[in-house]
Image 1 (cartoon, rainbow, N blue to C red):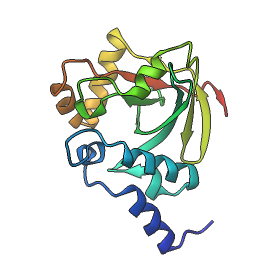
Image 2: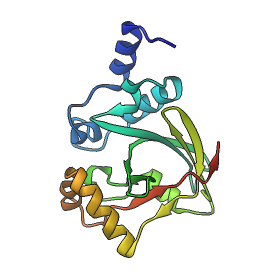
Image 3: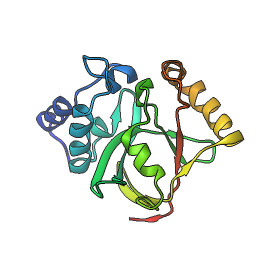
Image 4: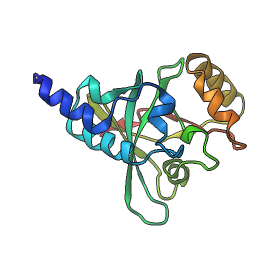
Length: 173
């Protein structure tokens, strides 16, 4: 239904309106921000408005994985990019942190996560995620970084290769 200006203002105040992708990913200490992600996930579960699903000029998905050790559900808001075949790609950049983000480590455990739940702005689906490698990684990385150059900066900050994950729509949710 229609959204009042007060409702939109309330939602955007809860999740913030970062001016750049780097500011969206990091808090004042320079570490990746978890509180902004938690607020963003809450808003994504409650609203289908553009102000929630588009942050720092990028469309987002809410990814739900199961913790490989805890068995608990973990939800994270992630920007995505469409590959040339129309599939959503997420980068486990963690803004160039030394370690892979927890969501990626959990997603990579196929026993805990044979498939993952992906919520999009006006729907949801289950995905058997594809962790890209080899020539396919190189092809998708080139396209992603041509469109979003800041990922090159993130890669320069870390010795690990930033993982790329394709989230095909495997089955309806």
